[in-house]
Length: 278
Length: 130
Image 1 (cartoon, each protein chain N blue to C red):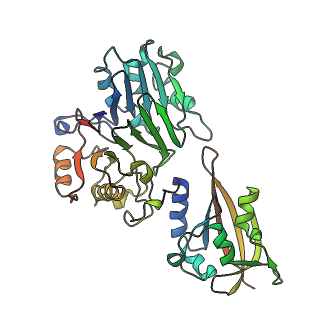
Image 2: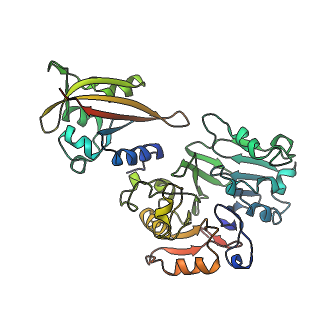
Image 3: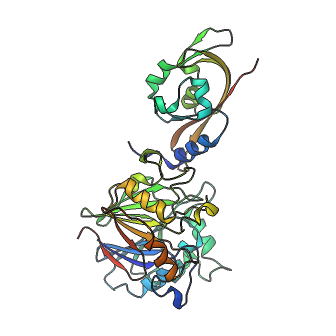
């Protein structure tokens, strides 16, 4: 399974030379278990660059949205595949008690915010509310569950039979605790991330920033390392970088973090590719 | 042990920060959690009991009416809320694990996920004052 990062920034896209190393586009990750099937994890601004790399051989695309904060959705209307009627497009994301997935997407993709409406997209995307549980995509078993983040927010676990990836880009598992407890039964996201090969996880804040941002739905550096240890992840990909953290700040904050020997740590950067279960 | 649903985790976190007694019962009737304030009604620390299956819990505590007449485990507002799937409010006497009888008033509310899945029951208790 090949995983490529197209946007690793959280909250707001940023640009400028100070963001050259890690990039400024917001959450978007490409995942391929088979060449013809493209899975897109979130539709942040990174999705526009992903558009340029899709080959003609792709016949189906599944976009898995975690939630509807704009940093995870703003690239949606700029995804070229949506304008290709020859590609089967499926969009998965959370509805609410009062608003279905179509209405939530229409809210973002309609005038005055956007000139094209969802029903007018040539690909005629098929919309799905993921079950809390497991469903099948071509070559993949996907498990979805709701996680600790303001509003209904899904996390996903993807398994191609050779390796596993867990995607928790916006996640505050420590909410209500002093620190990540030892008991996985009472920690959000632990079933999704248990023993996973690659854990793509929110790591927005420095530890000294977190106390001022409790309940905003994000994690600090030491919290995400503790979470990765709790679930016995093999490789942690720190994700959803704060827009206020430039390359120098990100390098400095991760240099200070103590990581156990049995956990591999990478800091997500645009263009980065990871092979899982290869 | 499998992870609890996020709604139950958030309810447990809320309960752990409240001063009034709170019980959290799972969809299968197991006592998942009670907070510090509830320990004084139950007569034992949660650290000592941990999660208690329904059949054990129903033997561990007893319910009596206001005149001291024994009632079955189904009289508990949490069990009624779970069985009838509606809010239940009642005043009873609870005999805790420590054998002490305490008059209590409880309100039990069924918890349902956004996808309509039954999650359990949240009960807030007040120790009744004569």
